[in-house]
Length: 227
View 1 (spheres, rainbow, N blue to C red):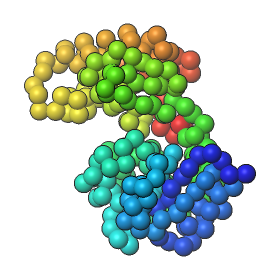
View 2: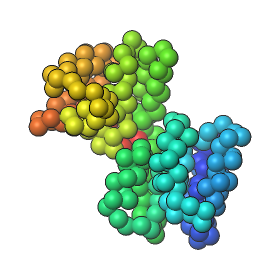
View 3: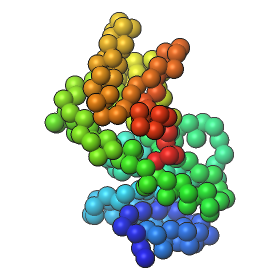
View 4: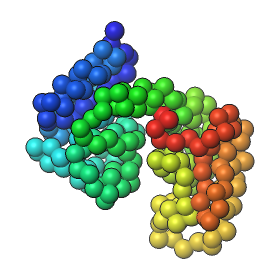
């Protein structure tokens, strides 16, 4: 039986397309695109899928370059990258662009399926940021009355592959070029921590200017591939 989750796949290699069909088609509703342009056209016409699985190098361009040049195009739609490119910088760039995971080709079918199932099973990554109403939905709970900076901080934690961020990352991505006192970050984290505790979430200091977002119920970091 086809599952209710919709997965769009960007892949131009016939062999890989057959692998995706074999592994996913009986469990999920899938659609395969062999060009970036076709995926873009579909996205503009229909409701966003629950997940996009994308190769990086396609016959009509580099998908990472498209995301880099159009960072908000797919909105909150999660993207998992797959590529035969085994390069540290490419892998790093994928996660900097918000990747949920990265898989190297050739794909191990069992590992691939486990990652997909785990992603959909774990609701901790189903996080919705509502800037207008200053709230965040995490694990089905509405964390409300957040300030703009608190929404940015929580977003940074959630989008990090390890749910762990450093002081420098916070400074660069939340405050940018604005010069602030180092204690300013501590104060904002303290206030965010107080609000999150009510919802079973904690921000734990790992020392040396690094913090992790964790679940009190699971007592472990909310890591990306437990999603």
